[in-house]
Amino acid sequence: PAGGDAATSPSAFLASRTAAGSSSCSPQETQQVCTLSDWSPWTGCGAACGDNQRMRQRYLIMSTRSAVLEEQVDDLKRNVHTLQDALTRTSGSLASKMMAKLEAQEQQQSDQADRSFQNLQRQADLLKAKNVGLETANLALESEAKDLKETADRLRLALPLVFGVMSIVAVAAAVLVSNWFFQNQRLQGRDTTTGS
Image (cartoon, rainbow, N blue to C red; front, side, top):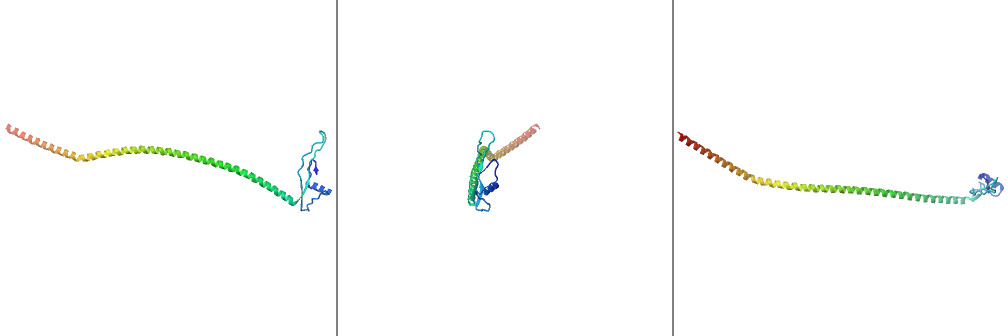
């Protein structure tokens, strides 16, 4: 083990361990890989006051390259699973937000369509009421036109009779005037004869 407040460099520690002959971790040994463990927790103080020491330690770990590779592969798999879980949660959250947004937009469009339909319905009702009024006025105009046509037909039939009556009256007036004129001439002739 290596201890103390100052961290021991891996190269110095490996060199000291190799020089002591307790283990062998040479770069030429391609089948072995040397790593250092994590630091252990600090030890407690031996005295309540005064000078004292605390220690922590870590160990040299030797393993084969295949074991290291397997551990790295496992780490990669764990990282992949973690990323996949995070991606799934993120995708689910985004999908939920998108669905909520789409539903809100759909509801807004539906409400707008309902309002437009109601406005069109009111306009249609107003136009229908106006159409009923126009139809009533049209019927009244047609009735008046019919009455005027009947009056014109009666006048057209009565005109010859009126003209005939006027002609008879004119002839009768002419006869009366002629008779009056001749009688007046006779009376004047008699008066002249009697006076002479």
